[in-house]
Amino acid sequence: MPRPDWTPHRRDDGELLGWIHPEGDDWVAVDVLGRPASVPTEWLDAEAALEEHGIAWLADPWMLEGEGDRPLRVRILEVTPDEEGVPGRIVVKIDDFGDMTRPATAQFTLAWPIPDRLRPPRDGDPDPRTISR
Image 1 (cartoon, rainbow, N blue to C red):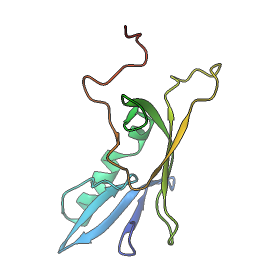
Image 2 (cartoon, helix red, strand yellow; image 1 turned 135 degrees about the vertical axis):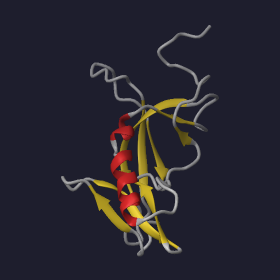
Image 3 (tube, rainbow, N blue to C red; image 1 turned 120 degrees about the vertical axis):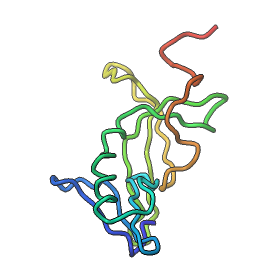
């Protein structure tokens, strides 16, 4: 993944939004993390799905499970899809809330496409901005 039959779809500025690939007589949009961004549909609808989805959501907080006794709040630093036989990767760091005076935070390199243990926050996830007792 991405396979040879996947067509890259880019914004006007050249930024990769994802891919569109055939599925039967239809087309499916896939975002830069390797997740479906549309159901099987017409080509133009798959393009529209990627355009609407965009990439701004990459800057949102994410939760990383399996690195401690509770999920860690992280930010995505890098997304590099598989390319020409070279495995891709997703690099995340513990969320430092943009504090430039804080020492560098731990980084984790994950496989691409997105593994199940990297996910959007859910209600009940720990909030690192609060002190628990």
